[in-house]
Amino acid sequence: MKIRSGAALPAIVMIVGILAAVTSVLRIWQISRWNETYRESFVAAPAAESVYKYDSGDEFNLSEFTLTHDIKYYDSPNGNVALTVQAANYLRPNSNYASSDLYGWVSTPTDVKGWRFTHRFGTESTTSNNEFYVKLSDLQQAAKDAYGDAAKDSLDVTFKPFGSDTEIARTFTRAEYETLRVDFELYERGIMCSPDLEAPVWTTQTTFGAVAGVLLIGWSVVLFILRFRDAKTQEENQ
Image (tube, rainbow, N blue to C red):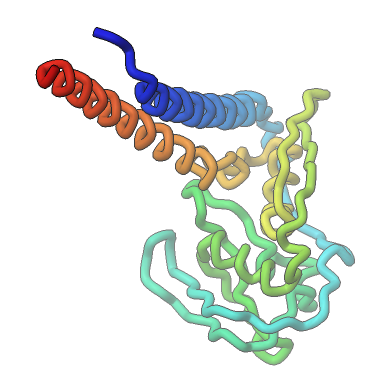
């Protein structure tokens, strides 16, 4: 049987599919390895060092902004909704509470990835001493509202485990960085290894690469079968 030139297409499709899948797998391995290094490098401080009070200084000195979506606050992670801050309220991340207490998107991580503990957002007339659980994704959306296009800026952040010269580096967006400031401090002080600093494994890039690779490989197999049947049919008709 002669090899037909048409077999080149399924071969090319398969090669592209394999490259896409392999690239995605390598990226997933790199992210998983970074997360493992991040967790294993954490050094817990002595109990006497674990007293923590966040002082934002002037770091959150932003003007008022408009929230574009509701933020729900909960009595526990995945629990009941305690209250909702409505969209379009004008809010102050630099409330008077911010210099001494956690407020707005300045929050502490919990043991549950993606859930934070903080005071509610509000105007100067609606600030509250009550603390609630809130989704990190909601706080990051609020940061996007406040920073606008700058929220997508990439920031290379380096932080060190307690008492170590080892440096851990990762790139964050501005919105991610502003909502995770406390996590960096807790890690460097040896108080907590926040699950929210772990890099997401299944990103748009890795998911697209894996799905595209599988689909292209599957398509190439189908093309090979069709080419084979076509060649066999032509031989039988000769």
